[in-house]
Length: 119
Image 1 (cartoon, rainbow, N blue to C red):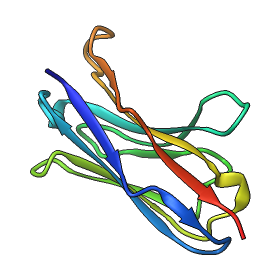
Image 2 (image 1 turned 180 degrees about the horizontal axis):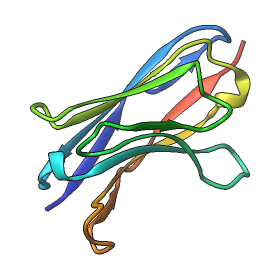
Image 3 (image 1 turned 120 degrees about the vertical axis):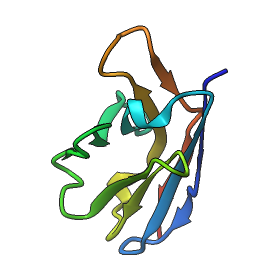
Image 4 (image 1 turned 180 degrees about the vertical axis):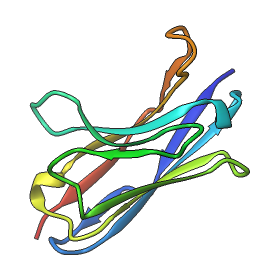
């Protein structure tokens, strides 16, 4: 059974850092493009960062480019999001997504981890 479990969220002050992790199981992790999305309160879900399965090509949302870094460890089946210089606008539920580039049938989501930037 495919499963994604996010961790690392929490409450931080502006300017601080957090590192989110997403652990995958039940899938051939190296075959999936991995993406972090977020959904701020009262707003739609938006792309934060993605990394492809083969070429490790990364892509970032405009609001986080230069502050966030996505990485993956295929051996450990994890994808991470290093978030620096956090801002109150980064407050959101952060979700991990695994999507196969070979079939739209294989698209999985985690339950999310809350990030709150306040202070």
